[in-house]
Every structure is written in C-alpha cells, then in structure tokens.
Image (cartoon, rainbow, N blue to C red):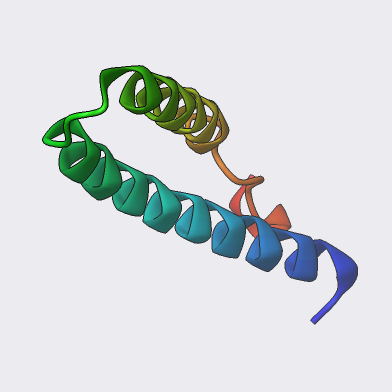
Length: 70
C-alpha cells in the first residue's frame, strides 16, 4: 500500500469514526433533553449541537478519489 492509498484509507476511517461519534452525540442529546437542570442542559446541548455541526462539515467533504478512479 503506497502513501496515497494509506491517506485514502485513513480518510475513510476518519469519516466512519466521525459518523459514529455523531450518532452517539445524537443519542446523548435525546437523553439530556429529558433532564431538568435547564441552565446546565442548555450549555451541554449547545456544545453537542456544535460538535454535530463540525462533524457534518467534515462528513460533507468526500474522501479523495483513488488515483485509478480519475
């Protein structure tokens, strides 16, 4: 596996991990939304939303194409 193939594989793995993190954050958001301490929950929810937004930005950038695909 050459350097370009390694980069492509790492990028694909990163996208997969970010997607998984986003799923966990969504679940956490649902749990926290049912709690009662509004000030703390608002801060936590805002942080989760920011993380989801950043993950979405990264996921919207496709991994580089293999050299043979172009």
